[in-house]
Image 1: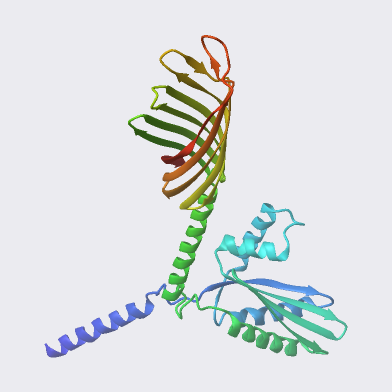
Image 2: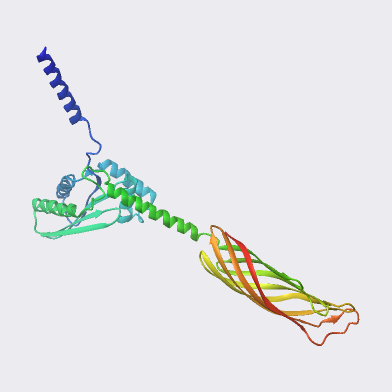
Length: 353
């Protein structure tokens, strides 16, 4: 009975070990690479070219899994169909084929023969960079060229940046972190780009009001700006009662122009021209009304923006002159014009698109 138990135990261990050894571990794989068929320039025999190709494949296969030739030719044909043959340069086609096959590394050996001189040029095309190393040989045999190809390939393999792959062929944690940072960076760039695609259009409404016993002042402005430059319109009105009992009422409409500087905190400076308005003076027995108005105003605003909204606070100073003030009853004009000047604090709200 004891012997049977030992036999079953060892049998179980053997089965478990064989399953563990035979089951493929997907992580125990080398990274893939593309090996382009050897290019020949000059008099190089087909047999010599194939020998160099075999040497290249054998050496690269020590670190990479080579994409099957049939799969490469299918991707190459698709690349030729996607872009015109004359436009499919070596670099463009290689990158397109790598993108189609989702392979990071591509190797290409070029053999150039000129008389007794033969040059070997081995290229590595990475998704991030390109590397080329060369070797030349005079009166070399095929065996010598094969050995030089092997050494050239081993030398290039030592320079291959496979930090993005760990020893099992999967992406390392450091690579994943770099990719995540790269993705975040691209997302930020995209967000900034989207911000840059805003219309930079602002709409503002500004209001100012002051009143006491015998004086009342009010100003209402609306403005529209694009990329920091704006135009607007303002309506100003002031009423005042003098100590002699006369009632003064003046109003004026302005065309405003201004400039906005800043991003989240902005400053606005502007000027306005009076294009219409009138003044009325009333006493117990007489009534006067103006025909012409001249005037300027200067204003400044400080604003803070949160999201698409902004709030602002500012100050304006204006000077108005009313002329041709005529008596409504008799038709006679006053000799002296009426001057109005002063300042007013304002506040407002805005919206950006």
